[in-house]
Image (cartoon, rainbow, N blue to C red):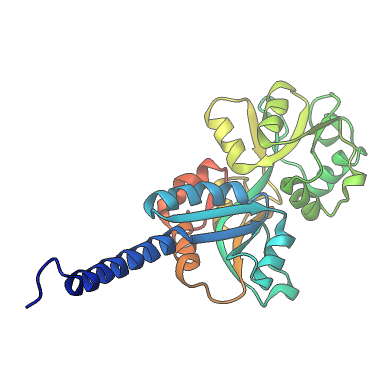
Length: 280
């Protein structure tokens, strides 16, 4: 039997310890390298980032890397394998059916006016005429004898794209008096300007109403502008916010999609002024 301090005994023991350490480090490194990259829509990105933070807190060693660049980048990166998931703030087109889309929330856009404005609805034709400057006084559409203050969104805003798409207008046709950036600016402008009209996220507008700001949401095509009608799919100015992939997601990508579509993040979805996909 070899002596406990002999080289013949110690050498195999050291090799065994070294092998175990290398294996442990390898597993640790693998954990640290569990990174999921998402690229694309700047509308989806803040939501994905917040969901990612919560996911990371529940899965030590995982990193959710969210990068913007527009829905087109999300589509291209998903196709080319440059991102684990693409982010797309619209429904997929006919030429994009090779991709799989997973809706994580819905977004709606509502027209708002001041709470004291007697107007309770506008036809699509009247909205277009107002935004094109053909109707400049509320009296023309049954309101007060007062000039209309038209509030439009700045270029690059997804709400602008959705608004123009629905009303079949080009931004060059719009004749705004005020150009704003985010939803809060639009709500503040209308709440402090009695004759203004703007369009903003439905969630942001409902939040403002419940917190006492003097605005009201106008129906579109007779459908009330509410989070409920967006969730039901009946409100006409709405869109899905999607994660997309080229093949069936597996591993970390599937885990993250499942988490992002679960009730565990509904509070985050609402805090970002979107509608959870299962909310009725």
